[in-house]
Length: 394
Image (cartoon, rainbow, N blue to C red; front, side, top):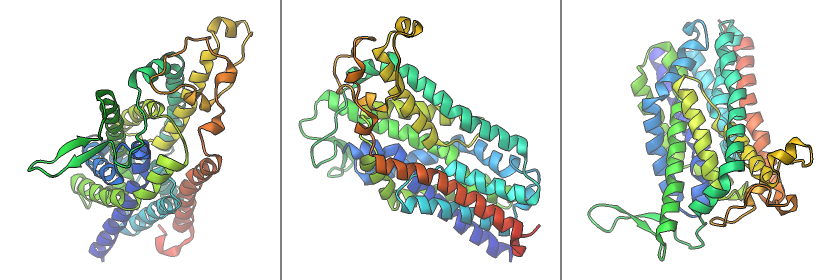
């Protein structure tokens, strides 16, 4: 019976990994796909490769936190309870993926495991508190770092990078398989700067995929690892294969949402946000904290737009109360890529576009709603099951 439950548990873990692939590919490569830099197929391949690299290198620290430290007694990770935990994680993520919204896999997984610990009286509130504190602090760090970049460095970066979206039907970067050895092929008439910009966008997507692997592999395999019946490395391999399947299938929906529907975020801004968010996620994963990339990235976008909007005001004027700066995410569209950066205080507030010029309000509302609903489904569903369903009683 135990072997049957183990097989079922691994299958459910594969289902979770499948949905993680669907939920995380969009944030990583949505900008590159939306700008027609690479195809969805190449995005899936790159996501799979770099997710695995992150999972096998830094990922074990987060697996250990969720599998061994979040609850006092890992004995509650029976095969029966594991199937239920993974079912709620995978089921909740599937709801988000079906809606085309990349939900927070970390919040969804921590919620289900914490619900098991709370229902059985084995939840380590100190560990949960540390995780939650970092969930609050990390987006704030992202906001302020992005704000500084937006005020002092973003226009210069924008002028230097000069990444423009491709109008061609063919992607900027593709793979030529006509020869014995496949090689990269770039769009016709693409100059050196356009090629460099395209490679930068792809490289940032790879960095995001790596950071996703460091944090999200635990969400699929931590409950099974907590039983001690399967070693970590085989579980990481199984989880990574499942993520790969999700990348090549259901991820197409989230790629459309983040690449085309939700925002017209300039590629330069997307790069800055990705670097900041990925750096924070990798740092948290290094100390064993499962992090929500989507929440950190969202606050980084707001911070970047706010910092860009403050360039209309000099610090000396602000200190005297002569100028007031309003948050404007739309400020990120205030200049085109490659345009000469304006000096601080040189612009008027009327030159800053509204946020509605940057975000699609209806799609943004749907994303925000699902970002909260998906972890709630996982947490509440798991708690009610472990607390009141006799078959899962402890």
